[in-house]
Image (cartoon, rainbow, N blue to C red; front, side, top):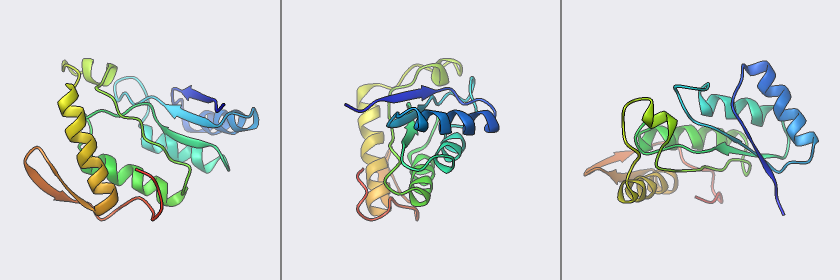
Amino acid sequence: MKQGLVLTPPEPATLAEWARLTEAAGFDAIWQTDSQSLYREVFASLGICLAWTENITCGPCVINPLTRHPAVAASAVATISEMHEGRVVLGLGSGDSEILNLGLKPAKVDEVREYLIALRGLLKNGEAEFQGRTGANSTRFPAGSQT
């Protein structure tokens, strides 16, 4: 059985130490909350965790279709995946505090599905259709990565 720990990103030096201690304690994954109203930027924070560990898997818990366009999310996750191949995972949900603090309602199932399809297309093929528009992204998951 694998075990992960959810960290709410503090300032960078403390986060680096937490990541190091999490791996030393034998955890398999670090998940970080993504809420621009409550915590530091999730992909920058994940980069810190990945840089200060050697084997642990890291990912956001979770991004949503309303505050991150799929091209932005694809670029962010692909970039940290290139730097730390095989150690990056991505959680996707309908939204919680990051949505509610903006006065929005969580995404509907169909919106999450459309977002996921676009995100996968961008990460695998470098292009996808989202909300009736076709877009491209030059940054993809490294060859052999799972999306």
